[in-house]
Length: 306
Image (tube, rainbow, N blue to C red; front, side, top):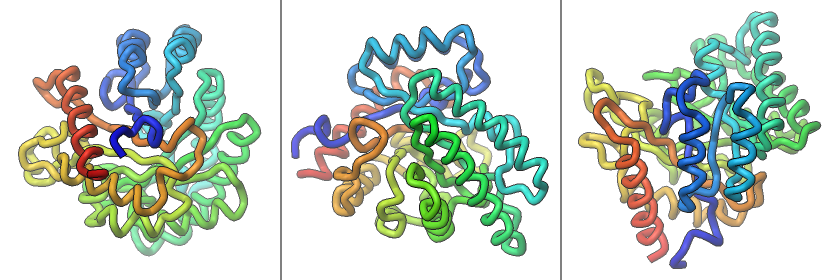
């Protein structure tokens, strides 16, 4: 297989590549237009867009034949929203804010909406937290489903940075099983950059998630020095000195996805998604980081299918 074009839809997480967008600030429209003009990417994951700019963003995506996904991560993390909080009022407030973001995603023409769980409170409260999260996820899926939107939960780390309830493969699978018993528009987003932080591998995790896994993210992580500005889940460029992921790891990830049938799986987008999360660190040029990303993907794809 020489080309990915008929097999995968390559995407980019806009609000990671351009971190100012996480607060709905800066040149959001201009940077979305920049990525839309780059035919390497045909899926773009955005977050909240100021109301006056939404029509422009939707028009850019439509004119460029670019599909959009919506990531609620900045809203959840910035607003300290907790869908698995023990306090029902806290969960309710989170649900209302996230339903509003689903409405925004629909307004923008997005085909998928992604969220993350609340924090991990320890083994003693894990079952209670999971029960609360299942109920919240079902409610969000029902709300999104009525509006034609797919919902995905992304797993994160438990100990270093985001410290989320949903991270390790086993509990992620349990969440997916329980939610999918009640709704038909729920799936799991797995990020290559989170696996080394969790001490897990793609070869172990992807088969365990099975058909629930319908949104692939790829990024790098850095764990060698806690004083480094890219330490943890900061998504440095691939090949960052001392980092966890480069061409070999991305190629292995792609190979696992192929063996397990991921690229034959139908989803909300035109083709199975393979999105990149990369972030410019101090003194890093985002144009060079994106060029790095493209080269890594093309080389990794060629290795995986050689």
